[in-house]
Length: 361
Ligand code: DAH
Image (tube, rainbow, N blue to C red):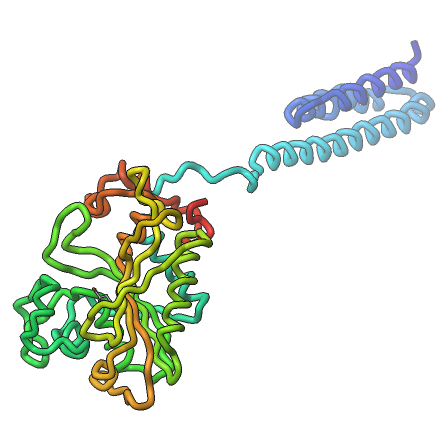
C-alpha cells in the first residue's frame, strides 16, 4: 500500500466518523484524535521532515489538502450539531398557548363580586356611570336628604346601626342602611343629566337565612328633564332580562311607599316555585326583587336640583339576593362565612375575566 492510498483511507475514515458524530463532545474527541498535538494527522505532518524532498513534494500538498478538508468537515458538523441542539431546546421549552390554564392556586371570585361585575356591564352598556360612597354615612345623606322626616318611624324600619361619632350637623353617624345616600352625594356634586349606579355594602340589625347584618345593594338614579316611569320600566326590564339570561321574564310593578320616591313601585319578577327551587322566567309565581319610583321633588330640592325643571327615576336592589337567584344558593349567611369549600363550589375562576361572558355558561 502506498502512502497516498493510506492518506485516502485515513480521510475516508475520518470524514465518515465526522458524519457519524452525533453530539458536540464526540466531535471534539474526534478533532483531538485527528488534529490535536498527538493526533494522527499531526503525526503525519511531523513525518514530512524526514522524507526525501521528492516524496515531501508529492506527499506534502496531499496531506495539507486532507487536513483542510477534515478541519472544514468538523467546523461544518459542529455548526449543524449546535443548531440541532438549539432546536431541541426550543422545542422542549415551547409553551402551548392553546392549553387550558393551570389549576388555580389563587382563591376564587366571590359570587357577589361576580354579580357586581355583571351589573356594571349591563348598566354600563346602557350609559350608566359607576359612583361610590362610604360605608359610614351622615344622618343627612342616609335619611334627611332622602325625605325621611326627623324622628319619623320610617327611620326605625331600617334597624340602623348608629355610631358614637357625630357628623358636622351634630347627628350620630350611621352605617349606611341602603345605597340611596350615594344618590344624594352624586346630585350634590354633579349637575343633571345624571345617569348613575352605585354598588356596595349596606348594614341593618337583622340576621336569618335571608338576612345578614351586612349585605349588598345596587342603586340606580337617572335625572334629566324628560325621564318618566315608562323609561324606568323599560330600563329595568332590559336589565333583568340581561342579568338572568332569559328572554321571557315578566316584571310586575306594584304600588308601594318610599319616602324618597313618588310614585313608588315595588317590582316582582315572575318565577316558578313548584320544584322546591325558584326558577326565574317560568311559572305563575312572583318574587319581590327591587324598589323603585320617580324621585321625590323634595329629594331633588334637598340636593340643590330644581324640581320644576328636572325629574327622574331611581331604583334599588339587593345584590346578594340576585346572586342567590341566578346561581342557586339558598342560605345568605354562607356568603359571609369565609368557608373556602363553599367558595370552591360556588366561586368563579380568577383566570377568567369576571363579567356577563361567564354568567351561567
Ligand atoms: N333604598 C331602598 C331600600 O333599601 C330601596 C330603594 C327603593 C331604592 C326605591 C331606590 C328606590 O332608589 O327608588 O329598601
